[in-house]
Image 1: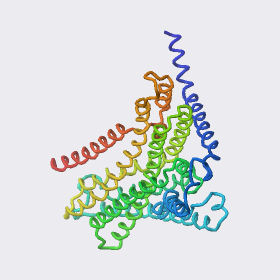
Image 2: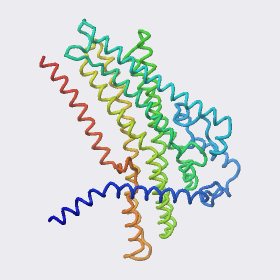
Image 3: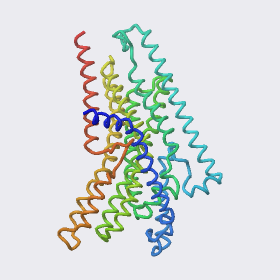
Image 4: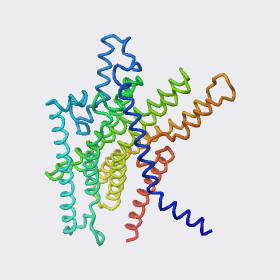
Length: 423
């Protein structure tokens, strides 16, 4: 017993270092795979199949590449540098690259000012509610809490932190970015552009609807209310642009998995498939790791913003219930957008989990095929998927988080309303 206890103690003491070492080995292997593919992922690679395309098709392909390299909605809100569509070397030395970086930095500065304005509005509203004695404020209890302004502050500061997190984002934005090159190699540029446009349209509809609902909730009857609406419009615009950035990348990752399955069914080369799966797995991990900070910021901001928004509706004593409903609709639309983002990320993992059954269902001439069994086991044990800080995002996890968030919001509202009725 003592020996076993000593072994367990030594293992637990060494575990953090072992985990870090394994993580570094994995990262080195991923970098090795992506760097080795530098020559294969160039536009002259045989996998791109541009030799049989005429000039009009190439021009159409250039248009689609412009959509996936640097979408307009992301450039508009400073998520990606404005005008970065060429190679990194050309953009770095050109005046256009300098102007693009200047615009992105300007948006970041404006986001910081918007976050400061949201905090200033919260402080002013808090002081005004404490000094109010007309019974219409939220001061019916020992403390006064301006939940609506806290909700806006969370969205403003979350947008600022999201822009800071995206500064090191480099898997898209240039023609030689990893995701763009691999998508070109797999031939999914056009499909990726079409899917991304649909996602962008949905995000824009959510943003416009949320701002319109916010305008109804706080109709500008003073300069302060106008500033509050402008702050919310800008913060929610950056927030939805960050969400669209995650959706844009997830669309590409999901299509790359589908393309791997399609090519395997068409040309079932088992030896080559192992190499291709290693490449795809490295791209998946690179793509998800580049989004993890942004993903965490968006999820935390949406949860806190919606939670405090509903708390404002439950705690307040408004004379106009229509404005309260409009405000709840405004924050709910942003929350729904982030919930959809979670399921889109989980879809990448679900597609990876369906690859082994697909391979296992194919026949290569033998009922009991050791080679087929090997690749099925290889893909299964690779654990490919969408990872956030080492955690594999699945649809079951997304459902649990959504359920817990809804229960938490509902519990807060019911507790507050029950407390009001008891007084």
